[in-house]
Length: 182
Image (cartoon, rainbow, N blue to C red; front, side):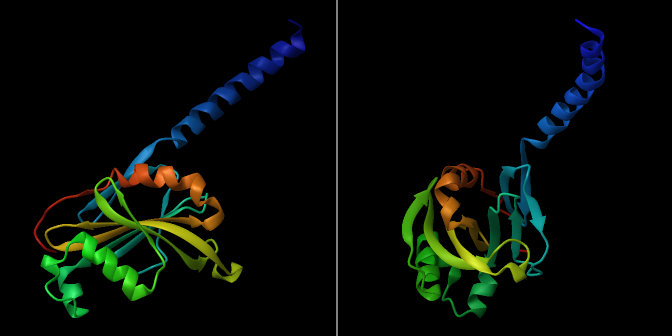
């Protein structure tokens, strides 16, 4: 091996190894907790703090995939004139959401949870000045002792099929801890 190759290997190999180590640290998963709900998402997701609603949490990725976690306490549902929210099933809540928002939705089930797939117009990326585009979402509905939960996975319509299997896998990681009402 000539001297120039040896020099390149001595100089570049440590840099390449360092880059590989850093990149491998970027992969993996992280558990996200919102009130009593936890979900495992890929490490590339970051929390979006643009919405100040304490009952909604957003996570986004560089791939423009969005995850929205929403808690609807029984008290907030009573304030919205929902009769006896403690007796509402997750299936009934799914139907109420579809009807009240006027969605054309496809009903499904994900890991035992009632769910629906629908399209909506949303902001394109983090910058509202970029305009809007159509998104497709998988929304799963869960119920706990003191709240009903929506976990929504969305992406621009053109990319939904690419992400659909991942949405189902992430939905399988949803856990809701039973606790006293906040």
